[in-house]
Image (cartoon, rainbow, N blue to C red):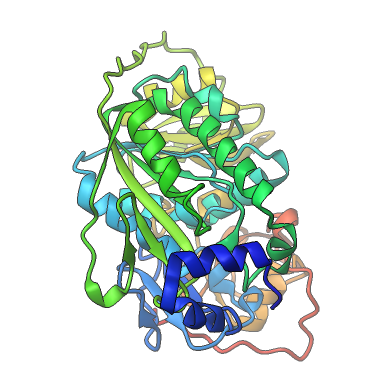
Amino acid sequence: MQLPTQFEDSMKAALGGEYDAFRAALDQDPQVSIRINTRKVSAPTKGVEVPWCATGQYLDKRPSFTLDPLLHAGCYYVQEASSMFVEQVYRQFIDTEAPVVLDLCAAPGGKSTHLASLLDGKGWLVSNEVMRNRVNILRENIIKWGAPNVTVTNNDPADFGKLTGLFDLILVDAPCSGEGMFRKDEQAVEEWSPENVRFCAERQRRILADIFPALAEGGILIFSTCTYNEEEDEQNVHWIAEELGAEILRIETDPAWNVTETDAGYHFYPHKTRGEGFFLSALRKTEEEPACKRKKKKEAKVALPPSAKELTNWLTEPVKLTAHNDVIYAIPADQADLVDMLSEHLRVLQSGVEVATVKGKDLIPSQHLALAWTLRNGVFPTVDLSWQEAITYLRKENLTLPANAPKGYILLTYRSVPLGWVKNLGNRCNNLHTQEWRIRMQVDGLEFNDFLEL
């Protein structure tokens, strides 16, 4: 790997005698790590635990994840291990039982699905992505993860400023110069320059200034980048503390993790920790911030068909049903007012669980419902698929069901984990897998060895 000379000079100044080990690490293969969705499966038997994340696992080698039905079922997320350090901030500083959380720069969804697991169905998560061409992959990954208490939005950071004092925790995984991803992304090396570093640092400050009013007084800000330089990292953290009003927090770490602590945050270097380059700082807001009031809206009557009454029986928790066009959504009953307020101020793609689509007198169960944590067991008949059958389904090809399979909507599972729906017509069945999510790679003659313990 040919590194920019000015980057090498800055890293030599920062690392001193460690630079040679750092440089050698960049020529090694990246680590492969996943984070388990324990609402669906247990941990893999052969994985090595990521020490700062209870559900993180390193794998010995990178399998063909596309060929694993359990990935498509949301049983795990392929995530860079260093970024799982977010968990330590949540566990050490969030003591609210039902916090309201914002992941501002969320696509493709690694940290959002992590936060959803830490919330564990309580409180609410707003998962936002400003780039329209990236927000659909975020929504897909949120749906597959299955948490019922998430709103996916597509907004600029400034749009959140009017929601003053709303969030107990805001994560800003800021767009950066990408130095920490050099060994995974050759384009990041080609695009690096001192001018780009300065541009990124200035953009980060604009984002932070826009979003800071939305953080509650005493709330926690997580600021992270995948870069090493002080201009984007430590200097910006001190700017937050001095200009916006915040206290830099010290995160407890285990010396065995080999995380490098500075006066403003924590660095992950690939020659010291098993992961890519990463920086994270946690701050507590000290400025006063009057909270925006959640106005109780007059209950609007939602035109639902009579058959929709049965939808509440499909779910394990009390919900409020709402409809948009012919699609019915379920919002946890205790968060309905918050979701209404978010809908007033933000460009919302989805809130809660998409349950069903109304077609005449028929209710077609949603793919989101199949993957949701709150789907009630036993409501629908199930058929468990072999690996080859599951791949056929995920390719949205014709599937043959057992002769004794009942007619109507059937929940397909793989290794007993819900995968999606078919409608059995007797002589054939309609594959209801989401068209945009189908596997497109050629799979003839390929096999996959399961590595998760269920």
